[in-house]
Image 1 (tube, helix red, strand yellow):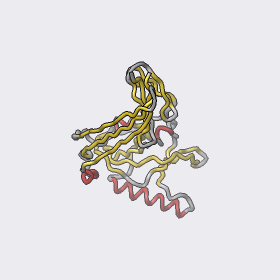
Image 2: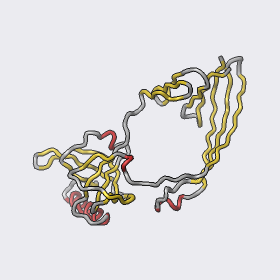
Image 3: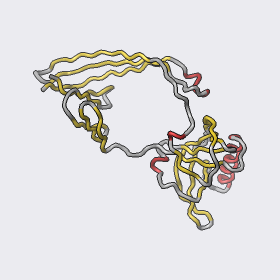
Image 4: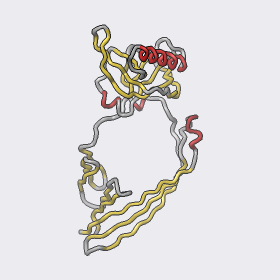
Length: 230
């Protein structure tokens, strides 16, 4: 009776199948604790979860206005010998930097609507007139979002990813196929080779920038590993 097997898809990532009994194994430096095939806890993996910021864009009536203002400010700083990075200086320093810099963005509210976002690249301490401030280093690209009304507020606020405007829900058909074989090495040890393929139509989530990506995609997942029979 086979209890477990370990395989290495593409020779890199580890995967484990549990068929009976409870088991614990290492994956990516952390422990996955499994009982009856269900993951109970993952210890040692990063605890950070992506988080965003949101802020009112005061003085700009459009995304173009914001882009022009940022370019002018960056040019002024560079002329004075400073950085040409896109910065936004704020009095309060965000405390949850790890979550913000793990793929987070600054969402701008323009004329009462969430309109655009910019990737957060870094948080740098700066001093203005002897008072500590924080420079939000932003990616230069302004990414338009699905428009959504947002009430006025002061300063910046944390913005949960589930509240961020973005893509719509979309379902697409997919086809999974595969096969494999075991080769007996000894009475208890065996070699296993498997192949799994996934054919699907790339989703566009009804976003205009992704419309040209509507195409059929094939993903191949070969794997080889060893197993043990109790």
